[in-house]
Amino acid sequence: MLAPQQTRAVETFYDLFSDLPRIGMGPTILGKGVKAPSEPVLRALGEALSSEHSSIDVVGASNVEHLASVYRGVLTDAAADARRPLAQAEVDRLALETVLTDAFMKGRSPADLEAAETVPTNYGETGGAIFDGMKRYLKNAVRDGGTMSPAVRKVVYEWIDCGAVPAHKLAVRVAAATSGLTEAQGIELKHVWKSRLMQSGRSLAAQGFLQGTWLHGIPAFGKIVAAVTAAGLPEEMAPDVMESVLGHHMAGFVAAGFAKGGLRVDFAKMERRGQIPEGAGQRLTDLYDTATELAGIWRPRIDHASFHGLGLSEEERDAYALDAGRMRDAIDRMSPAGRSQLLNDDYMQFTDLGMPKWLAMGRAFYGHDGEISNGELIQNVYAKMVQPYLEENQARGSGDAFVIGTAPVASRLGVRLDPDAIVYRPAGPDHPAFHTLAKLVAMDPPLARAARRDLGKEVGQVESAALVDWFRKIPADIDTLARLAGRPD
Image 1 (cartoon, rainbow, N blue to C red):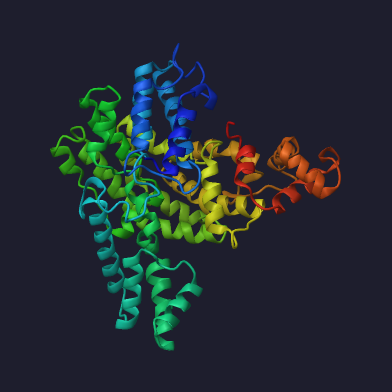
Image 2: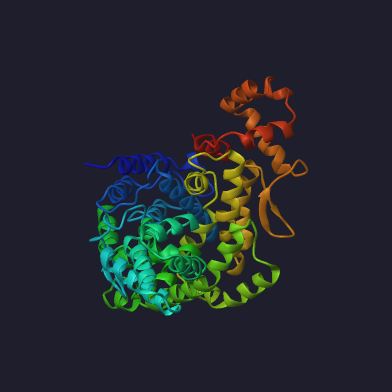
């Protein structure tokens, strides 16, 4: 029997993928008579999304909505490259490659994934083996960062073992008090927590709730074979699909998790087993090695800047771009299908279909006792979630495409890209995005009724500045924000 989250994922998948014109795919992209992936492909992917270790969302099915956004980008690129609309077989294959990148393990707990099979890694081929290996690596990294008293080391190792490193200094104080530490040991614990876990970025790799994120792009080859054959396609296609699935995984955030947890995939072994095409082992090794090295250095700096609502400085961006040269070369050497998955996974994050996922995560991360206003939520999401993606895409040469893909929804939510600082900020009355937001609020029936109730007059009689100010101050509602972002009904 399916869990409620799996049911919602499968229903959302069929809703979005069975009618591609509904999500913006027209005759310039889809060939004559092509409206969706074929029924066997839809059925095979539905089975993957309802399998034992399938990806889930705590609420809704935002991961599937994101996949629809990526699929739209992948299809658009493929049609442009082919200079013609796509045939049914091409639409089918790209559906498999796209959905299988995120179909497994995301959102799952370490307990769920203990026995889940993965690709071969330096720690093993199950979720449990990988988690244990990452924990050992983190403990060694913290230990090697300097001296620690035994009492403090015990507390820090317990955090790592439990997959629950505190995110706030107040929780560190509580841990010190409840662990019987002396005042001096409490000060030492705070220092170790700040310098060796938080500032270094290692705390991310230690968090249990993120383990499915690190693993979701490296499912066992058998899962890919099962989906390909269930779709009625030849098993010989599976290695090529596998390469595309693996290629998408090296976004900066995931690469940082690999770097801080010391996780490496053994692509040479996969190639020897025939699980990826000949030559793919070196291509993927180059991609993962350069991406993890780069993210290990730069992701903590990016996160520190974005936490304070800033981007990298001009000097930092120049240095980052220089360091990213080897990764740009690795991306250029990827298979065209794998490269499309990697790039569209970024370009298509913050779209009409992709943005609701980020808004929901932002409310969970930045809400104050569950409450956060629309304005606070939008500002936090763009400053702390969108901005790091922009920095990473600029460094690897895809910044312009990322800005273009992100711009429509940013404008609809009243956000502008500061051309001098290259930082996303709330738009003011002197910017068109401000008035776009005001117009959309006035045109949204539920918001218009609420504004009339709160402001005492019809929205047509309310100045744009007052309407936007009201909207930004009311409690955040994800469904409302998704409507404004343009998500299809």
